[in-house]
Image (cartoon, rainbow, N blue to C red):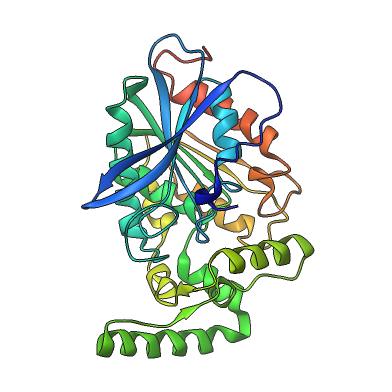
Length: 311
């Protein structure tokens, strides 16, 4: 379900949380977000900005974990990056540099909310959003903790792995698209599966079909070009001495666990790397979301709460 279709937290019991649609500005664009907060709170609470993945799917990629973290006493602002969901901007265009600025502007917005402790801000994200979280934490020292789920470490390496023997054909297609955009100002739009061919599986096939039904207009082929020079692993060193936590199942076939290992190897302390044996790419946000919330909660309690420890 897309963000426009409603807020999907998928909680079953536990402390009550509130969720509201909010808007903030980023580079002159009006961006939309879902702010999830604990209903019962004693004063201002720590908060995170949450970044979605390449598909732009906020509800089933980000919000279930956001709801569980709110139950643990954290506010989470799940943003629709520019061009996605209910936000302004070039439709479905994914520029990592722009998305990093969206995160920083969302953090500025959060710091101005009365229920948020502006001295205790962090960032989280899943898949491409997990990589954006790493880059945003590296760029913005206000973000004191980074939770990165199933991130890519290097865009060029990741796309080459996904495309395999089709890699030269993708590069040639991107070059033709560059020329068309230079000539006319607009390029090709394609199903997400063209940019990100996935290994066959019932779950991934169903998700791809759903995304195609939500975005029949297709994604800019330019997104592939923009990803080629995006290398979160090269940025990870800038996060320390702020904290980083990476979570990726070992059996992830979409973004292999070696990407998280690469980011972890480059990062300074404090850092954590969690590699569940199974769960696939969607596991930390789906079947493993409760376990993810436990790991993330313990990490955030240690590194994001000003006094340390759960409230």
